[in-house]
Length: 288
Image (cartoon, rainbow, N blue to C red):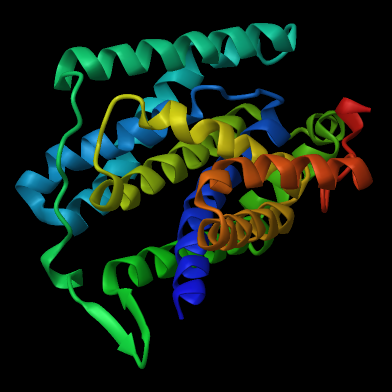
């Protein structure tokens, strides 16, 4: 049963990676921007939740914090990032790198350098006990929220007119423009959605991992690993990769804990040896 609990814990970590990676993959697929500040939005989401939770409770924080992060993302996209879409991709990389450093230092200046405690919501305390299997209600809640986020994104991208334009823009942006559809508001909306997902992941992780300024930097590398393993632009590739990374990490924790962090990198190397585009990577006209 201990192995099963470790796998469940690994899937929990994988669910954070999935929610984060979906946003990162969407932003890159449509805008061509490698958002190195994605982890910073994750941290900002956690800090906003810390403040809102003290006034409106955890569920108020879970609803409002991603919205606040999305609004910040809209301002950044509208007044800074938009100018870099048609320029050298290196400029976008450097801008988001600088943005990530600025955000982290700003968090240190406002809330201090030490971590902040974040209590479990009272409604979700307690444990599920099934024989020898014991698992906390809050962790089950996080898994359920990750499933909800994935389902909501899939429905948005596949069952709405907005999603149809996004998918067409990812495949062939020139053709979409030729049909008279402006991608600028779509890019803004996708960026807002992507960073809102990062903010949501930050809120969900706060009660388990606490809130501290470097939390975004620490999770960013793992998020990129999941995107690379899943394959650029593949919705289900990211989901499968997140689950795979989580399961491998959980199994490694059970058998050899010191190698838990390294296991995902080894997995990435092995997969790229046989599938350079990742598990479900797609081709893009603009990148070919």
